[in-house]
Image (cartoon, rainbow, N blue to C red; front, side):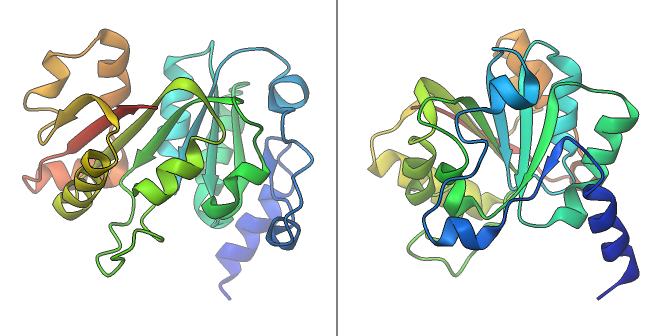
Length: 228
């Protein structure tokens, strides 16, 4: 185990905006202590909550928090040494509307009450090319149905990806399940940003470190927004 991972895990434990509940409790079917209490006990306001699921380094979580101070944002990932960077940045910038949760996404309903979340971002998720049933691809209808358990009716799910495979498989599943599409584009920066409201354009124009690389290589960025 690398010393750098150990250092980041240790530092995460000192951040009061990072939460790392015992995974075994979720496996046993037990709810997390903060379920239904994120607004009152963590953010101490009634602002809407947005999740970035599979947040990686937390770049999008932090980017959204900077743009929308009147919303609360939680980055969720199982790898704490990755989102350490986002947690560290949030602390350095004294962003009061950012938190991070370390858990597996299949247990997300153990940490949030029904209707506690208003929006979800799935940014550059692993396409899981061998996952025929969609039980590992976190943009699949299997997961969308899970997310619906914690979302308010009429909430938004945003899928942003560089992967043609993930985009195609996700869209196919969404069409089969009759989900409502608000936006659907194979080229975010080529045409989509010119036809969406300013708040969505501002959100889409948050560009992560790796996204900059993909754009420099000529890759197109794809996007789907569902209303569920």
